[in-house]
Amino acid sequence: MLPSSKMRTTAIIVACLTGFGAVWAQDLDSALSYAGQLVQEHRYQEVIELMTHFEDLDDPEAQYVVAAEIGRAHYHLGDYLAANNAFRKAVALRPRRIETALYFQATSYLVGDRDQAYTIFREILASGATDLYLAVTLPGESTFLTDPAVWEILDELAKPVEVDTDRGSMLGVELGQPQAEVEDQLGAPSDATGSALTAHAGPFLTWAFGFDDSGMLAQIMVHNEHLLRYTPYRLELGYELDWRSTPEVAISALGAPESTSTGGTDVVVMVWRRDGVRLTLEFAPLRPPVPPGFTTDRPVLRVMRMEAVEAVEAETDHATE
Picture 1 (cartoon, helix red, strand yellow):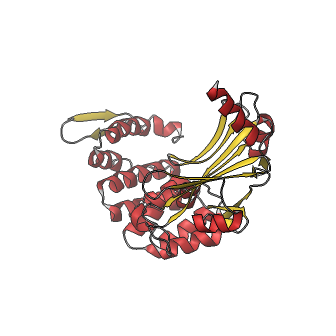
Picture 2: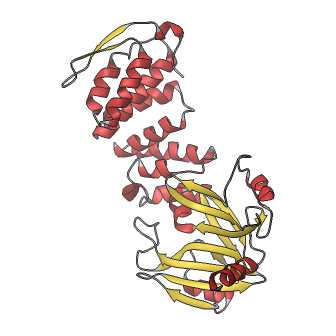
Picture 3: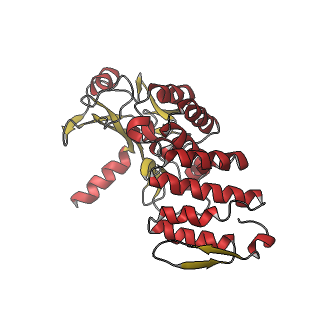
């Protein structure tokens, strides 16, 4: 929310550059609206020159907004030092604004102030953040996620997600539970609708809870690679299985699978039935960048799926009718 009524009534003339001629901005709100249009057209230099006219405003919130807008524009132009200076000012004004902190982390990393970037990244994780997509992609995923220091922080602050493959349970919910109970346990919004509850990190699906036609939990799916890359969560399956497991480890822990199939390059899918639970583990090489100690040519756990056997059989019967 922007500044005081005093600010909103202060008339300021802003001369925008090339191609647009003069633009009259009656206040900061108007300038921000116009800056939004410029951003959509990737005209970041014009955003900087527009917002610079507002740097001397007295209101701390206005100062924060202006610094953040200028910082983002410099970031998109690849001028990371100027962006870092702007975000440093913005963070000093509003240290609890997570998006600004993420950009400050990213630009600190990109200008070589890695200790500062590590400190911010650690604080973001310690604050309880669960979606790390921007934290690892803004500074350049291919570089950030090959940094051993980054993985040390992730390993130190990782949060285990314990799965009971015998009961078909995860995060305190179990296959066969009514949707209302699952929503309550997971803290889903009261207006949640549809046949699935899903979680994402950035654009990537991390896990999903699917319900059958009667509203009972019929499937739990976890995308282990997305969890590993974009969240602090780490999958723990019991039987000495976890997010690092290979097909060989799974067979050693669970015995011979009921079926094994392949799909695509180096993808292995194995299925077990355990006390009314159909467990499917999909293994594939991690795509780069990979954590230290891993390679891109060895399959590790990518997707875990647990389904209620009754639901699977009902679906199969329906398909064959």
